[in-house]
Each structure stands twice: as structure tokens, then as C-alpha cells.
Length: 495
Image (cartoon, rainbow, N blue to C red; front, side, top):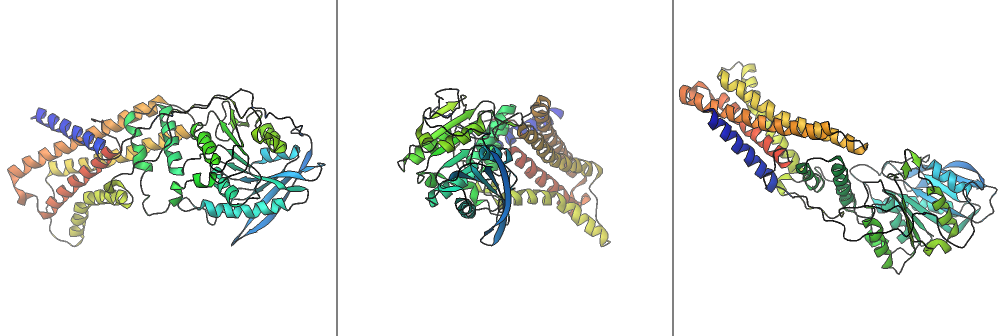
């Protein structure tokens, strides 16, 4: 008898493994076919024009409000003291992790000390949420600040450009394409590809760096390729290429080679190809060895970064095509950022939530009816002791699988985002999740066997209507919960 149960449990585990393999999009990222080879490791901007280096001038700041359409933002101007008139200006656009006018202080002070006026406005937050944001509207807001900088005393209105970092690098090309007064564009840690593709690329890079089990990787398209429950997130598929193909300004691109979240090879190649559509070949690319997404090494701005910003900006137009065009450390990118396959209807959008809620509701429906009957003082039969015990164990074990899986994902995400590794958590945690999944199946099989035996010996009347409803609800709901776990890769992949 025990061998039958073991065989049944093994069969169910294999079935869940097959279900998980075939029920959703797989994940087979393609390798990068092109490469970028820096001409030299020296990141110095090459040109024949002498410019003021960082540290030439003193600097000061001024903070003021800038009215937008329906809002007001605070901005901080950092400007050189003692520099001649008609200096370049640079407007900073925030990434997703920044939003204050006090951000980018180090870059602003360094640039101002070389003679550049730097304006950092607050990010407008009343129209910026995790669910909804519009990059074209954000560009229009930033251009209000851009106009303020162009009109500032001492600024050369024909030499004012934009600095876009991370998410800001999706916004900067819009502003540059829409406003011909933008004189140049600096893109730092630029995703270039649409947000959904960048997020999938970053997730894949982080997980591979951690060495997670292969089945977990297939959760990438299933989690990031979905239509978000409740709607919104339209910006996830925003494509900056049409705007980049209209850019005629000189472009400086900067990356850190330790930035696992950005396509550091594919991004520059895509942008160089895009601006060429407008007949623009004015690009400069710099890679900083060991620098992260913020172009920092051990929390400090990479050596030479601000000098590159200042030298390239002050040297324009001579620096727009100065050699070496591509310099610095050798970047590495194994796989392409590419469009994701979407999950099938039963695991997409709102169905994702309804399926989970329905499964939990099925587990709870019997106990709820039993409690209602007790409150209404109606006679109900309890499940016989073996069935009640095994049914409760089946429900708790199946729900525990999802809870443990979610906790595991949180720990893995924490390790990845903090650039830490821990094999005990990554591999030991995964074995624990898989083991609990197999245990939940074994408990369910044992519970079904107990029910078959009870109904053979006691008959259906011994259980009662509420008891039957409870048993079926618990087991169908638990099976559905385990099917959801299988979809996300909890059970060993068979195919």
C-alpha cells in the first residue's frame, strides 16, 4: 500500500513538473552577436581645444521655484563664480531612484567649478506613480526648467544641454527630439531598450550572477511579461527609438562595467544606429571600470567621470566627434535585451489574481459553511478524524509552499539588489521550497487515500453535505494552489 502512495505522489510531482514546463512562456535569451571594443583604456576626452578643468572656479548655489502646468517644482542652480559670461548649461533629469533638487550634488559642483551652469529641478511627483507615468509629459515638464536655464544671466543659450541618468535617459531623447534648442545630450547608464525589456534583462543578469537554479529563470517572462493586474504600467513598453532617430545633437554615453542592470553593449550600439537615421554621427562612449549604475566605485564617483563630463561639454563642438570615440574598460554583455513572450490568458493580468483568490476561497468555503451552520445552531457532521486532520494538513502544506516561495524570492531579490551572494540562501532555500512542494503533494495523496478508505467503510452519509463540501473544496483548492506553484517553477522541471 505504501508503495502505491509513493508511486502516486511521484506521478503527481512529475505531472506538476510537466505542467510547469509547458504552461507558460519559456526563457531562452539570445547571446549578443555584436561587440564594442574600446580604442583605449584612457577615458580622457580627446580634442585640440583647451578648456577649464574641474576645480578652476569657485561655485555657489541658488534655489527657487519653477511653475509647471498645474504644479510647482523646486530647483537648485549650481553656478561658477568668477567665470566669464556665455558659459554652457546642463539640465539634469532624474532616474527612477532620485527626485530631489539636492541630488547630483557632486556632479553639479564639479561641473560648476569647470565653468558650467547646472540646474537640478525636482521630479514632478503628482503625475508620477509606480502604476502611471508619461515620459513625453515628463519631458515637457523638464523643458520648462530647460527654458529657465537658457535664459539665466551668464549662460550661453546656444550651449545648454541635458543630462539624463537611468530612467532619465528615456526622457532626454524626447526633449532633444522635440526641442531643437537642446544643444547636446549626456546619457548616463542609459537603458535604451523599453522598460519591460530592460527589467527582464536586469533580472536575468542579477539571477545569473547569484547562480540561482535554472527553473527560477523561467519566472522572468511569466512575471514581467504579464499585463499588470488592475491595468496601468503602459510606460513599461515605451520605446525611445523613434525619438532617438530624430536626435541631431552630439551625444555622450557613460556606463559602468559593473552595472548588471543595463545592456552596456547593446544600448550604445542601438543608440548609434538610431541617431544615424537622422544623419547624426556625433557620439562619444565611455566605460568606467568597476563602476556601478550610479558610476560609483565603493560609493565614490568613478575616477575621471566628472572630468569627462566637463571636458566633453566645454569642448563642444570639437569634442562631438573627437577620437577616441569609444574608450575605457571593456564592457561585457552575454545576452540581448529583447521583447518578452506574454503568458497565456490563465496566468495574465487580472486572471493571475483571480486564480489565486479562487484557489484560497475553495479551500476556505467548507470551513466557512461549517462555522455558519454552527452560528445558526444547525446540526452538521464533522469530518471523521482522519479526514479532518489530513484535509487540514493538505491545505496548510499547499499554502505554505506559496508563502515559502514568496519569502525565498524576497531573500533572493535582497541579495541581488545589494550585490551579495549566499549559496545557503540561494540553493539551500530552493531545495527547501522544492522539498516542501513534494511534501505537500505527499500529504495530499495520503489525504485522498484516507478519504477513499473512509467512504468505502463509512459511506457518504457519515460525512454529511458540509463535510463533503469541505473535503472537495480543500483538495481542489490545494491542487490549484500547487498548480500555481508549478507554474512558477517550484516543482522539478521535466521538459
